[in-house]
Length: 176
Image (cartoon, rainbow, N blue to C red):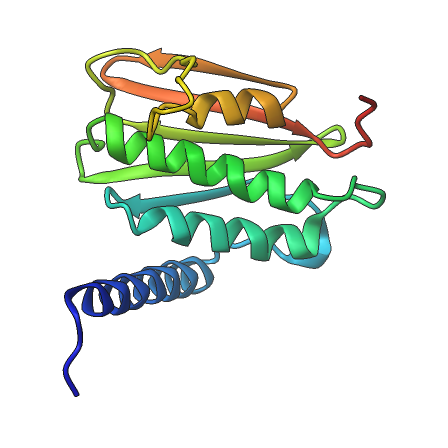
């Protein structure tokens, strides 16, 4: 069977995501660094390869964690918003920043008083993360504008050469 370059790329990306997630899941359970989904909202930490494929790994891990930890009465779309925010933050880190010294990116999340806080730490970039006002014809530049729209707030912290972007999503019904 002959595959196109895109089909080969898609398969390799899927295989990497699966490998990275299984590796993360195995190492987390084997070392005891996992949350008991029935125990509530224990903070989670992922150290992922500094690669575009880590976006999907982080999104799937957060989805799985939220399935067991989501607060009762969370608004419709909360899970989707959380998945989109973590995807944007990890994607921005991989696209615009440098890896941490060990070639990775850190992704953390935790429940706090009816909200979810997501944090992504990288090795810093040439410029600080900021929301852009992309033109309708631009093909990129909307990531942090989307994060700003979906969250109750987001902010940037720097420490040495590391940059952390944090975002908070309320798990209570939003009133428009």
